[in-house]
Length: 93
Image (cartoon, rainbow, N blue to C red):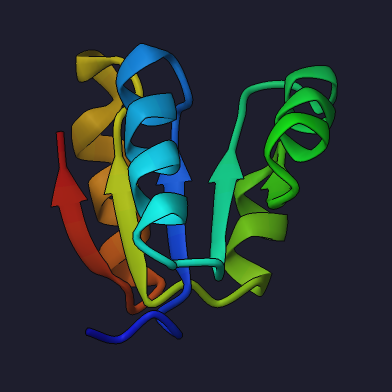
């Protein structure tokens, strides 16, 4: 198991939060979250002690190896293209 992978979760509703908790429990400490607003990003950072971003530019500069997409379904394709263009492996919820 490679716990050093940089995993970015896009969207942190109920499913994204479940993925985040599971990854942290499994020892994937190099996990970050992309949220819609700075306020929700700060809340996630505070609650889970992980990197948290509110812009794709900031999230991309973090250089994720894997992007886990759990945002609204209507945004999956656009987010998937962005993740692939940034060179990350992709998991779509």
